[in-house]
Structure formats: structure tokens, C-alpha cells
Length: 380
Image 1 (cartoon, helix red, strand yellow):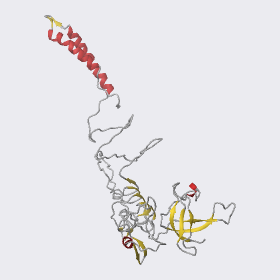
Image 2: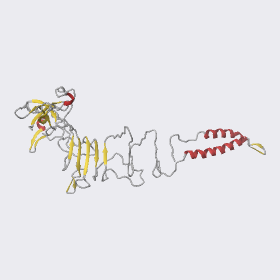
Image 3: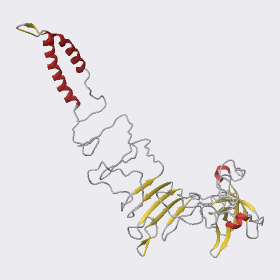
Image 4: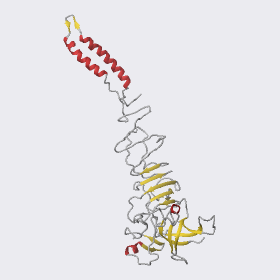
């Protein structure tokens, strides 16, 4: 297989591309229009299809790719016909953000801003954007950012990085001479696995070529899957006042298997069936502002409920039982009031009772029909 180096001059990503029809329309998505930069056919142009079908890492404009000829889709009728394919961009600047290189053919003098960006070191060419822009047209929508940092690598890591500060690390606890080399390796043993999914990087400075490690408290959105690690996670609320005993360990102090999710907002939605939370110990809901539950029905099946305080001692009243007792008392008092209408003694009627009895009767009748029993809340 003969590999050649080419620079990407265009890429077909949708039906608005000028080469959309040339590459087979939707079957040609990901195809690049290239210009060779080396070899006997220097500057010759053409199309190359992505080599991988289930993994997409499309290049930007001005990035270099390896191209090579392989059988075309017409192999059934002509097994000698070949087309070009390409693999992922060359990491010429060793940058996760982009590896575009300008002026390959024009041989123009670089502007002063780019001269500072493109420097040579003993380790090879290193891309260092320091002014926020390199003036390279990398595509229709992609814009270079000078502060996108690669994640710091440690021995044994398998890492997938996007171009804009998103990454997946299949890593481990890393210690050297009993000293942690990152913020998740204070405890445990070197080699204990950890998985970190991060979308966006926190405020780690403006120098984009210096690597950084994940920070659950600063990165915009993160998911951590741990085994023995202790993650320095500062949660929004640690109000565990409701616990009488066995209070949960603070997240930043817990050591062991756990999954941590952190972002500006979390939404858990079950579109067709139940949303189920299950715990061997307790389920804690801690908030700095409040707890709201909006639903048509709420059922709490438990032996004890404490309202207002974990030290609450006053029992709740049973509505039906209280109503029966109060109605019985009202009936007795009503009977006394009725008798008071005609109450008399040996001297004749008793005016103080006779006159007040009608008011008592009316008031007792009103009370008897307005017992304050909830229509919606129940207990046993």
C-alpha cells in the first residue's frame, strides 16, 4: 500500500457542499478534497473517502492526512479500479485542538503573529497559539481557540479527546514514591482503575499548549466512575441535619466505589416507565433552597415519619377517629342545648339558659358540618 501526504482543502459534511454531487451525495459524507504535498504528483488534486466507517475523526481544512488507494465501490465489476481513502489527521503540532498548517504551497512569509505561534524545538514542531488566532481558515464554522488544553497523560492511560476540551479518560490511580501525581490519587494503590468523562475544561489559564488534568469542581460537566479513589468534590449542599445517626460521608471524603456527576444542572427523565432510586442505606436529598414535589399522588409507606425535626415527639392526629369522637361530643352537647330551650325549675323557666340555647344549637350544627379533615392527605 502506497501512502502519500495531502492537505485537506475541502470536506463534504452536508448537501450544501459544492462537491456534494461529485462524491455520491449522502454516501460521500466525510469525503475530502485534497492536494498532494509530496511525491512525484506534487500538487495533484482529488477526492479521498474516510477509511473508518464506525469511527469519525474528520479533518479540518489545512490539516494533513495520509491518503492511499484501495478498491472502489465498483469492485464487483472492476476489481482493478481504485479510489483514495484517508486516515485521521497527522498530529503535526501534537495538538488535540487542530493541526492545520498554512501556506504549504504559496511559500508566503508568515505574519508576525504566526511566526510566534509556529516555532521549532528540539522535540520537533510545536504549535503554540499565543495571540488567540492564527488566521488559518479551518472550516466554515470551526474557529481556533488559543486556550484549549490537552489533558495530562499518565502511564497506562487510554484517552479519547475532542477538539474543544471534551475527553474520556480510561485511567488509574497514579502514585510515585507514595506521592499522588494527580488530584484523584491521594488514596488507593497505583493501578486502581478510574473512568473520567469531561465536557469542557475549567479556568486553567490562557496558554493552550500546556496540558491540564480534569477538575470536577471547575470543569463544566463531569462524570467520574471510581474504584478506590477519593475525589475532592465540593458539592453544593451538605445539609445532613435530618440524620439521627449513620450520617453519610461527605463526597470529598468518601473512598471507594462511587459515581459522581457534576454540572450546572441535572435532568433525569424517564419517558416511558419508572424512574427508580434504590439504596442499601439511605437516600439523601439535600438542597440550599428547598424541596419541591409536584405530582398527582404521593405515597409514603414507612414505619415512622418525623415532620419538622428529627427529634419530633408530638404524634399526628387520625382524622377519621378524631371526627367520630368530636361528633359524639357535639351530639351530647347539642342534646344539652336542646334541653336548655325549655329548662325550668320549681320557680319556673331559667331565662339565662332559655335565651342562649338557640345560639348554641346553631353554632354546634355549623361545627358538626365543618370538621377540618383534609381531602387529600392520609395517614394510618
